[in-house]
Structure formats: structure tokens, C-alpha cells
Amino acid sequence: MFSASLWRVQLRALTPFLVLVLMFSSLDWFDELLNGYPDQVVSAGLFRVGGEGNLPIRFLMAFALGMGLLVRDIDERMMEFLDAIPVGRASLFAAKVLLAFAILMIMPISEALLGIVLGHFSRTSLSNETHFGIVSTQLGLFGLQVVDFLALALVLSFLRRHGWLVMGLLYWTYELWRRHDPRVEKYNFFRLSEAHFFGESVAVPWSTVACGLVWGAFGLSVSYLLYRAAGDRFFVLKSTPPGRWRQVGGGLGFVAIVILGGATMGDALKKEEPDSTLTLPTYPMGTARSSHYTLMFPAQLARRAEDLMAASESVYATLRTFFGTDLPSHVAVDGSGSRVATAGTAHGSSKVRLRLEDCASQTCGSILAHETAHMFANHLTKGRLSDHGSSTAFFNEGLATYVEIRLFPSSSAVEEDYDLAAGLLAHRNFKLEDIADADKLHKESDRDVVYPLGYQLVRTMLEAHGEDSAAKVLRALAREEVRNDLVGLTLWRDAFQAAGFDFEMTMAKTRSRLKRLARLHKQAISKIPRLVGVSSLGEELWTVEVMADVSPPFAVVCRVRATESTDEEEYLIATRTATKTFAVDAEALPSDVSISYQLGLRMPHGKFTVYERWVEVVLD
Image (cartoon, rainbow, N blue to C red):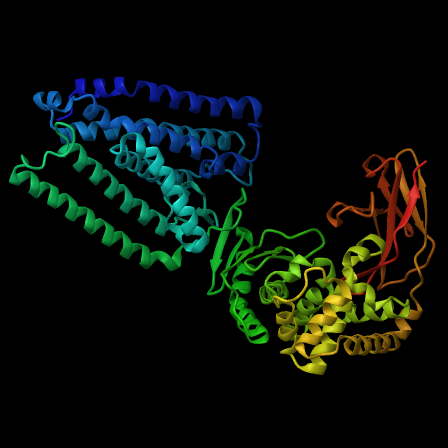
């Protein structure tokens, strides 16, 4: 059936592609060993096998090869000649496809070997395994992907020069469909090369695999039927004997069975597939899923992730009742980290980042509720909360803090620190009107005062008008007739009035609440001094000495920035070198002309810090 001469002839025809594949594979090795860091940790070397770095090259190679693999014999009028030699068209088709598959698999096999080599030489006592299971699973997915690429090219090759055009039309059709219904992504076999981890094992995307199997079988079957039926130029229908028609019918029946079976398999496994919208890290990750959340988390935090997912449905149900609406899409939760100095961060209406390793099991639910509340609020305002972030931060954070403290109380620490901070700010005559300009607060003192003060304002409003008043105000912000140039207090006066409330009355009641908090914590506040520092620059250190005595449970902190526009994530945190002295390495200072430093008083439970105004100093 397969003679040595048949393999030699086909290999000779595919020699240019073989040379290209070997060249790309060798370049990958040279780049890694000469320009990379061969002694890197195992995950950075081994898990690269599951990446998408070479996906465009693999696809273009497969598509270019497949576009000429079969039709070249037809276009060069070789079919009648081939029929005269003792080799059937089925054998010829199989030899061509198998050899093309073998050549295209050289690249993923080379990637896998490189990953194993790097993993072997970078093993440590904590990670002494070679992880052949992960590599073999990824190679299997790569193999299916290569078959799908090749099947797509073979089918489109019969369109000759129009095949590339049709491929482009298919791509843009998929993109438009994906924007309309993102769920179609799970059936995209181009994503088979993405690595999904559940704990320390690979989570196979079964829906994508099922789709890939169906398409591979269908594409190869159709291309075989077209190749076998090709004669003088294309189909020779009239001269087709009855036996040939039975073979064609049997082939089409087989394809139909594969399609129906694959669709059934995809539906059965659909609920088990992990969400693939999150950015994949380079260390072992686990995936957990509930009705409304998909959580990706470091594998070592599996127990904490389990607790969070157990509480997630209660969180969603409570917030759905509180806001009177549903979120438009599933919520993706990345438990691997958040912004600096935050326990969580919400992004739009579909993604949350949590610092899962830092939150205790009993507080994870309240943090998730806080961030999900941001999503509900942003959804109700049709994105206006995020579009006017400086003007809306106090209400946005105050409402989320209310949800965290009042609806999902895990401890009294946050509320106690926020009440004390609010009372201290009132004692220092903080202007409540300033909370409607978070950018100004960032420049002058600290934009985070929107948390305790916004919480007091939202609580005042909800106590006066009921818990449904929050949703009413948010919906009022989403009105189409709201002018885009409304900012600050004017924006909120308009929203409150449209919702049927008096914003000025709410502000007045909030000021009264703040004064009550100042009286309630008068004894503690009376012992808190204003923080003043004296700075100096030495040869190695820049230091600031605090000219005040602060006793536990309070603590003093110090941070440094270059300019008033510096992002909070770029602040330098000064190190305490003595009871009243903080220092920063002189070489690490963000500027050699002038800097600003800020002293802050951390509240007893460490949940909030009240900062003084920024002090600018010139560096001599």
C-alpha cells in the first residue's frame, strides 16, 4: 500500500517546508540558549510549551503547505497519470496528509524538548519533577490543532487562489460573531495551544477539543472526497460508478455521525470547561467555577478558593436584590493579586482581581462583595461611574464599603477604623465638598479618604431613603439627557434631584454624622498629634524625623513621590530606622531635584491610614 518510493516522492515535494520548519525550530533553540536564561526556574522553561508564541508561524506553515498539497496534482493534470500507476488515490491521499502532519509536528515537538531540557537543568529541591504528563497533554492538543489547520487548508485549497480570501472572510466573520456572543470562543480550535491549569495538572478544554475533532474529521473527509472525485479538471459525476457513489455516501454519513457526536459531547462537557478569559500566569493555577463566578487562583490556595466559591453565590444573590438587576456577563475573578495597597480591584463589569493569599477565609466573601458591588454600580450607570472617576469615586467606594461592612460583616475592624478616621478628619475640619474631586485629593493629601467619608455619606442616604435609593441614584446618573460636562458636586445634585432626593440635605446630615463621630472618639482623637517631619539628605540615605510622639495602637508611616502626578503604585515607602526616623536609599529617590513626602497615621486595626498634606523638599 505504501511503498518506499511513494514516501520518497512525497518527501521530495515537501522538502522546502521541511527546511523551513527545521530552521524555525533551530532558531527557537538558539534564541533560548544564547539570548535567554537557561538557568531560569522550571515553570518559565517548561510551561512555555503551552504558550502561543509560535502559533502564527504554525498556522501559516500548515496553511501554506495544505493549499498546494492536493490541488497541485489536479492543476498539473497529473491525476490520470497517477491513476495509471499501482497506487490508489486513497493511499496517495493518506501518504500526503501523514507526511505533512509529521513535518508540521516537528515544531511543537521541538518546543516540548526544549522545555524539558530547560526544566531538567533548572530543577530545585522544591521542584524536582520533569512533568511529562503536562508535556504529553499539550503535545496531544498541539497535534489536534495541526490536524485542524491542515484540514482547513485542504478544504479551502480547492478554491485555488480564492482560498486565502475565504480564509480572511472566515476570520472576520468569527470576530464579528465573537463580539456578539463571546461564548463562541470555547469552540475556537486556534485556542487549543493555550495552557489551562487546574492545580498542577492541565485542564483540557473539552468543548474546544470536541469542536476540533469534529472539524478535523469533516475537513479531511471533504478534502478526500474532492481529491478522489477529481478527474479531468474537477468532479466527473456522470462516469462515477455505483460503487463509488456508495463510498461517497458512506463517507458523508460518517461525517454526519461525527458532527452529531461531537455536538453532543460538547454539550455534555460544556459545564466542566474552565473559563479561558483570564490572563494565564506562568506558575501552577487552579480554576473553580460557580453559577456567576469563575475563579483562577494559585494552586496552593485551593482551600481558600473553595471557601470563596462557597460564599460567592450568596454574595451575588444579595447584591442582585440590593441593586435590583443582574450583571450582563459571568464574572471572572483573578485571585493571584491586585493593585498595590488594595485587597481587590474591579475592572468594568466582568473582571475582578483579588489578593487571595492576603485575605483570611472569613473576609474573602466581603472583599468579593465589595468588588462585585463596583460592577453592579458601573453597570447601572452604563459606565458613567468609571468615565467620571474623579467625581464619582466617593459614592462608588462609599457604596461598595457599605455593602462590605453592612451586608457582609466579617469583623468590626474595618468599620471601627473608618469611623475613627472619619471622626479625625471632621475634627481637623476637612471640607466634605472636596470628596467630589478625587484628583485634587490625590495631589494635595490622599484620595483614599473617599472610603470612610463616602461610606458615611452613603450610609446617611440609605438610612434616610431606604436601601433601594442607591439604585435609584445610579440609574439617574445613566439618563441620556445628563450632560457630559457635569462634574463634581453638580453631577450629584442633578442625579439626586432626578432620583427624588435632596443632595444638599444628605450632605448636611453627613456633616452632622461626622461631628457625632468626632465627639464619640474624642478621647482617642485628643491624644493624636499633627505629624510634622524634618528631612535631611546624606551621602547614602535620605531621612525624615517625625517631630511628634505617637503611642500604640496607632503607628506612623511615611511615603515619598516625585511629583503630584505620580501614580500611587510608584510611591516609595520609607523604612523605619528608629522610633521616629524613616529613611530611603538616596540612589532610589525618584528625583535628584525635589521630592515630596507624606506622613500618615495608621488606625488601630491597620485598615486605614489618615495622611497629612504632602510636603515638598528640595534636594541639595
